[in-house]
Structure formats: structure tokens, C-alpha cells
Length: 573
Image (cartoon, rainbow, N blue to C red; front, side):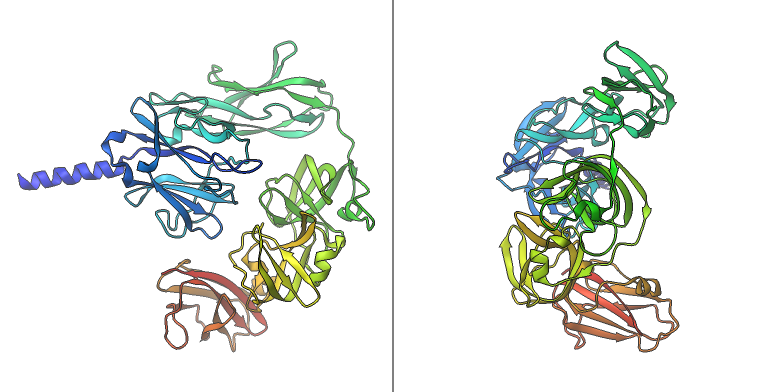
């Protein structure tokens, strides 16, 4: 009898530990202006069966992956209930929820991460430490800034997180059901038109994706074009796969009007169905003039000579930041330009893009994007080596990939995450838009910094893209020849207490091969000689004297003859 009771208790405990139905339901983290009214909202089923303090909500910084704040659910304000579900919300002070790119939120029960509840916004990253340690976040796919009083929130009906989808900023509802949300009961199949959704202007003869999302519905869909002036419909495709996107080649002679809507429905019986929230337009093709980036940028005496023109240009993506990205069509002065707003691109993409030339507080940019096509990938233009004083004062290198060498940190904190360096010719500002972990220290020597030259708040500044752009140990950025000759990585990373550094030497000259480990200041920590047929070493987190080293970022560099390759790793204790 006692054995039966023990088994029953263990079985009941297992059920209770696996049955927490809780999810992030709504939050607000970023306004267009000063951030106010930041909050999180959580939904918990059968709340009376739990101790609320056993649930923890942890906020993660995507720049580095560590947590920066956490709150247990008992500290939240209790909101309304729907069937057996209760809403809880917590109001943070100004700046309480970070708005970097990306950041994340995790929910755990008694220290164990709730499956599917390490969510992020503005990108993905892998958590370091805390309940989500080693887990890669799930990007919710929408982001702010929004207006004061708005939030990101789940839409739809159902009883588990997967029944809902995130929607663009809408009127906030902390402690109450979201706009268009029903919790509990049987999930309803739902279709939501995403684009066009009102206000778009699509040209005759152009190609655009019609996009949508669906919940609890997997069948084929029908796509129709609604004409609002006579309430008629044109079937664009009678049945297509419900994969969220369909390319529409608009006929060159299609009727011009500003009263169109897209209607998407079940291909069989028309239910579920949704249509564009507002009308969109089909317009005549807009004349666009092709120019090189140099032709758009070059103007030694003032703004671009093509301000206000619709232009088309081609370039390779050199840098991507939170709200905009940079392209270049060759190395050197006047060959780079910024594109706003951010599009779906990767560094190295070669693109053709059309839009309006604008001077945004004296920075030349292409905005109001009409069309963008990714042609493929191409080599990124080599950075131009310039002095810090030239970077700080030259319009020539605005939006161009550059490199400064042999610099010293002359001010580690100018405010707003910016700092200052000098190679002896005069100082320049280093910005904070990139995803790098280096923390500047006064008088630090840096062998080189690569990045694009941005212009904000009336000042030119260097914007490194990531840690690979900041050479602290004098090994430089990997060139294409080295990258093809040496394969190098370590696992696990982060690690504690040891990691295996693996390598593959695709070169005939393996004499005098060595692997060197450096700390963040460029000081040599450990050195290994590499022998023929050796493919890995294990570093136990100790220096050459057998003394354990401190937690932090370390670099490992493999040198083989004239070739050299370096990587970064993180020791956690």
C-alpha cells in the first residue's frame, strides 16, 4: 500500500510540474519619444493551483545574452479572469524594459523554463545564464516603437499560446483581454491579411507579395481583389497553399484606383475570411532614374544634388543596425549610402533598390522604398584606412566602410553608449549601434576598428558592427585566403570549466603551427604547439602557469605559417 501511495504521489507531482499553462500575452517597451508606461502581461491557467512566487519572469539583454531584471508573478497586479484563466500585469518604471536589438523575456516555473516562453523582439539570440541558459529565443515577429498607450499583444482565440499570434502595436489593455482576443473555449480558425493592409501604392506592372497569417487553419486559401467602388471581386487565385505569401504580378494595364482591398478566405467555403483593414492603390509606374551611389552622394559643397528625386541604385549591404542599413558599390569616398527604414537583408547581399533621396539632418539617405530586389551575394568592399581626424571631419566617407588603426581610448563614456578614440591625429566618436561586447576603458590600446561612418546629432562617428570589427590583439580581420585555409571553432561556448578548440588545417605548410589564447586586453594567456594530424586541444580555463583565469571573454588564434585565424569564446564561472 505504501509503495502504491508513493507511486501515486510521484505521478501526481509529475503531472503538476508539466502542466503549467502560462504565457506572455502583452507588453509595451518602446515609445517613439520618451519611454513611459512600460509593462508586461501574463496569462496563467488554473492560478489557484499554484504559488505565484514559483513563477519568475526574466528580462534578457540580447547584447551578450545575460539577464538584467526579473520579477516573480506574485509581484504582478491581478487583472480580469476569463473562464479558468487569469491575467496578471506588472508596470515598470521608465526604461525598465530594454529596447535594444534584440532583447528577450523568459518565463520559468521553479527555475525550469516554460517550453516556448523564451521570446524576443527585434531579432533572436542565445541566453547566457538564468532559466533560459543556452536556449535560442523565439522572435515574436513584431516590434515597437509605438505611440504612448499602445502595446504588442496576442490576437485570436484559444486556450494555449500557440492558438494566438502577435499583432502590430495597438491600443494597450493591461489586465484585460487584448483587442480581438478570446481566451478559453474551442479555438476558432482565423485568417489575418497582413499586406496590403491599407495605404500602399502599388504600380502597374510591378510584383508584390500578398501576405497573411492564419491560426488554427491549414487548408488552402482563395485570394481575391475587392473593388470598393462597386463592391465587386476579382479572383486572383482560386486555391493556393496556406503558407502566408503569394506573389502578385500586377498587369501593366490594370485599372488605376485608390479603392482596392485584398480578401483572403478558405478556398472551399469562404470561412474563415479577412480583408485589408483599409484601401490600397494601384498607380501608374513612377519614373525612377538610375544612378550610382557615387552620383547620388558626391557633392563637396552641400547636400546631394538629387534630393527629392526617385532613384534606383545598386550596392552590397555592408552594415545592418536597428532602424536602417548601409550599402556600397565600391571602396572609397562617396561610395556608401544609408537605406531607411530597415529591410529584410543580410550583410553581403547585393541589392537593387528604388526610393526617394532625402537629407535627414544632413545625412544623405534613400527612403520611401518603392522596390527592392536581392540579386545574390557579393564581396563586401574593402574598408578604407583613414585617420581618426579624417573620419570626424570628412563628408567624403559618410556611410562608407572604413578602418582606423593603432588607436587609444581617450574617453570611455561620452554618454548614450558612445566613446572616443584617437590615433594621434585628433579624436573621433565611436557609436553604439552595433552588436559588440567590448567595454571601452580609458587608455586602452586597440590595433584597429572597422565600421561604417555614420552621421547623427551633427557629428560623424564610427559604428563597428560586432566584436570582429574591434581588433584588440593585433590579429586583424580574417582575410578570404586565411578563411579558406583554416577551419576553427570551439564547443561548448560559453563553457565551464573547459572547452574543446577544434581546427582543420587545409594547407600544406603545417610547421610551426600554434594556438594562442589571449584575454580581452590582448595579453597572452596560454600557448599550444600544434603537431601534424592534430585536430583539437582542450583548454581547461588555466594559464601557462596552471593558474585558473577569471570569467570573461577570451580570444583564441591559430597561426599556421603566413595564415592566421581568430575566434572568440566566453568562460563562465
